[in-house]
Image (cartoon, rainbow, N blue to C red; front, side, top):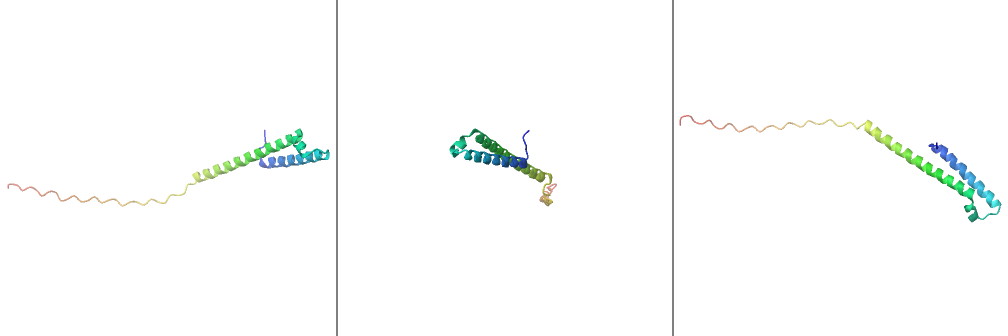
Length: 108
């Protein structure tokens, strides 16, 4: 199972950088030109491994950033901002009904 630790991947990257430099130095001692060095299969393999490690480091960093964002969002949801107390609205007063219609005169 591949490592998900960025420290481990950084260490692997340093190792492959060192191996690439050693391979390049060995090939230069043999008198091989830089164009031919780039075509060397072992050199290509080492560079490919280094590229894969760099992609893994980027993926780990992205994952860590997403996790931090999720933790922040969860913390915000867990502790909501206390709401200000609601002010009670005064009740509207009902308009008083006009006095009842004058009583009808009886007998007129």
